[in-house]
Structure formats: C-alpha cells, structure tokens
Image 1 (cartoon, rainbow, N blue to C red):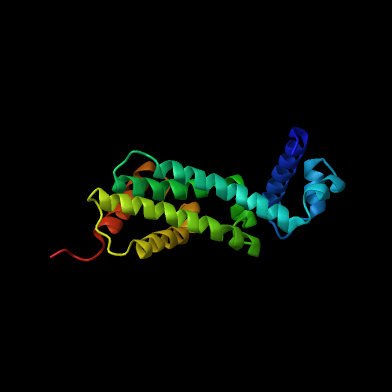
Image 2: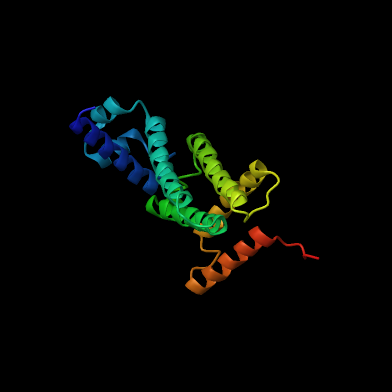
Amino acid sequence: MSGTTSKTREILIDAARRVFARKGIERTTMNDIATASQKGRRTLYMYFKNKEEISSIVIKNEMDRLHEMLETVEKKELPADEKLITFIYMRLEAFKATVTRNGSLRANFFHDSWNVAKVRKGYNLQEIALIKKILNNGIKEGIFNIPDIDTTALIIHYALKGMEVPYIRGLFGDSADRIIQRKESVMNLIFNGIKVKK
C-alpha cells in the first residue's frame, strides 16, 4: 500500500469514526462518510465494500488503542496488587476517554451493532489474558492466593464490563476525594472480600 493510498484510507476511517460518533453506526450511510471525508463515494467504495466493513475497522482501531494502554500497565514494574488496581482504573478511564472521544454516550458507539460484539470478542480474550498474567505474577510474588486463575480472571473481566456504563456516567463520583474513596472500596472488596475474617 503506497503512502498516498494509506493516507486516503486513514482519512476515510477517521471521517467514518466522526460520523459514527455524531449519528450512531446504524443511522450513518456510506454517503454520509463520503461527504465527511470530502473524498466522494467512488473513492470510499474503492477502499471499503460497505458500512459494516468500515465500522468493524473503526471499532477495532478503538479497541486496539485501549489494549495497548492496558498492555503498558501489565508491563509496569509494580507489585501485582498495585498493578491490578492500576489496571482496573486505567481500563475504566481509557474506556471513558474512548467513549467521550467517539460521542458514544449519545451514539451508543460500542452497543448499537452486532459488529461491536464480534470485534469486542477478540479484545475480551486479550484482556482476560492480561489479567491472568497479573494474577499469575501475584501468585509468584506471594501476594495472591488464587486456586482458580481462569475463573478469577473471568470474574474480574466481566465485573469491569459491568462497571463501564456507571463509571462513564459518573456514578462513581468525579471529585478526586470521591474517586480515592471508591478506589479504596474496590481494593478492599477485591483483596479482602465481604466476609468477616475469624
């Protein structure tokens, strides 16, 4: 792919992302994307067969950005318990930033098409693998005692998915003090549970 071809493709993808953010994937047409890119329908169809193909690429690009940020956390030189909490908050903050960037609260960028579920499936597996690495390292460091790493990683992953919308909507609080209090509650729940120790 030549430099010009690659640049044109990126322009089309970014135009699609902006239109999806404004109108939602379902209500966007190929004509909308062509108009926003100022490249025309013929050029758009030279690169993409249909809206589903371009929406998959846009979503995949966004998920790749998120995954790269989480990989950076996993590679940090931190004790496993600190790394896990950092991972959890980085994931929530990164997802919130992605949603904000894409106007997703209005357009349901990550929720309004079967395409999203298909793209997220691969991303979910990558995220679970990163969580497992952190948990395994915690066992090696003598910080965690986890009889079933696979199940624990799945529970953490799905708990985070369930927290996405409330976190994005600010239900965890926006002030620094409130976020610190919430962080301490999350740490206590993950590392100490809810049962009284005898």
